[in-house]
Image 1 (cartoon, rainbow, N blue to C red):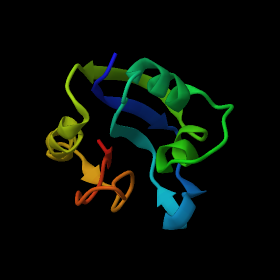
Image 2: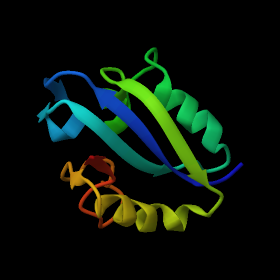
Image 3: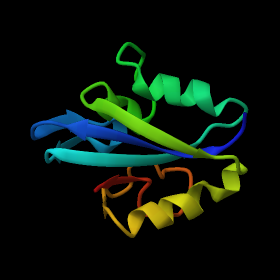
Image 4: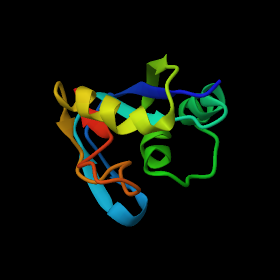
Amino acid sequence: MKGVYTAFFRLEEAKKIKVGSLGELKFEPGVYAYTGSGGSNVLKRLERHFSRSKNVHWHIDYFSVEAEPLDFFILPESSEYECVLADIVGTIGDPVKDFGSSDCGCESHFFRL
């Protein structure tokens, strides 16, 4: 199944996490939302995000191994709607600058709610 999604995570306490090329970032406790797209299999992508045992590659991998997975929702839309969904989620959250958006012009695809 193709689609775009938002996955939710909880961080219980403040943590400094090295996030690839973004370097070490400080995250406050709270609920975070990450928006992405799943290409040909969105459920496998979400399964990866919610797994703690993986090779870290994407920005969300660095965060998700440190946080508690909560839930997700999927919209069965093409990947061109990923940025639209990130913009909508961004209206209710504070962006983590440049997180998850290195391949588009968005400020972020990751938000503290």
